Image 1 (tube, rainbow, N blue to C red):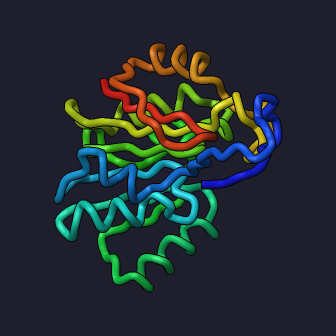
Image 2: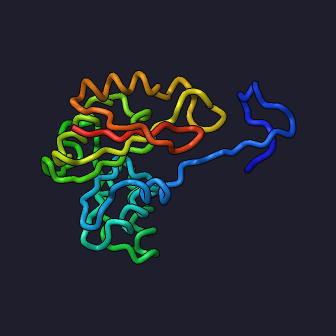
Image 3: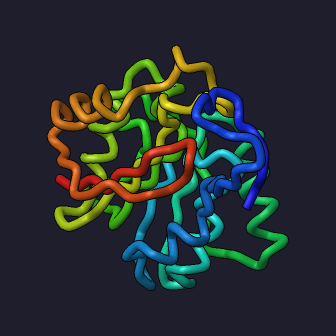
Length: 194
């Protein structure tokens, strides 16, 4: 619990206590239906924030495809996996804004994870369509983006995509929202399916 004022919180009174929650990948992965043997694609994997805990949960029978355009991110994931003794992560440099950009087969993944990556892409529809293409018929997508109601941390508000605007893009891509999940004070989380 933190006591203090947050930028942009006009209703705060001095001395009032409030909880600040950041994205906790282990807690989120623990609550979702990632199962041993799953095949998971982590779009825009960054430093492996989700790739590493997912790899542990799905076990050696499963595979995490850690996908990013930045070689430095992929090097970090490989290094972290090696240090932790995780051997079921495959890193690949890709451009997810191109059709077929993941280089994965149609209907090959049980899960696709996208955390804080759509706001960075101009071709959001292409990225979502790629996720849909590689998703198995009963597969799921975990999508986490910056919300636009608290900009005290994270990217500028002009870069963020509101949940309402993203919902429209999701529907146009042939995906549907199964549920919204709580992920942090600064993000919204959605579970998508075909």
